[in-house]
Length: 156
Image 1 (cartoon, rainbow, N blue to C red):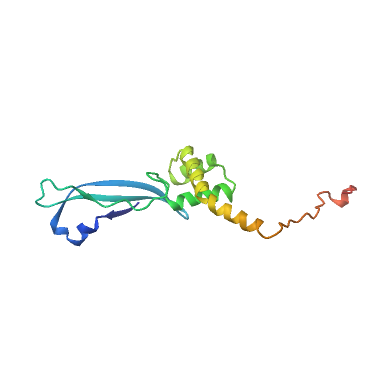
Image 2 (image 1 turned 30 degrees about the vertical axis):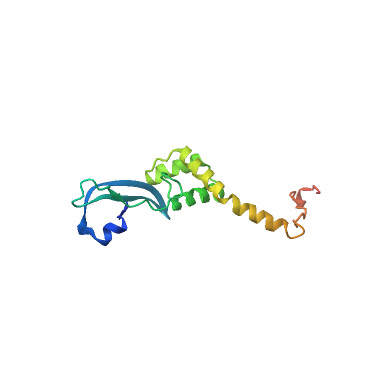
């Protein structure tokens, strides 16, 4: 598990002027080749000393791909590589995460991550298609392939 503690800039600038009154914790699962790790972000809640009616201060959460989601970018990338490059369906990836890493991940969570990534990548795919079609013509290789072995007495 990797834990990161963050504090508001005003507190780090003058920590003696504040006292901690609590903390908020959020977690995500991330992937680094060979293992899944849990990233925990602890945001401590501070209040100015001597201020009875002072509003508490808390650092904002770092930008996140999925608001409130448990999939960190590394794990989401691994899910996409598994699905589209390694041709592993989500139910099989779910079983792999559970068996290899002891991480139970609902299949619906995996599917929502794939859907979100597809939504993010849509403008890039649209631009790639536009550039491809702007070239004047699209060329493909239509060379016939003889799937029958000529030694079997069959002709193609």
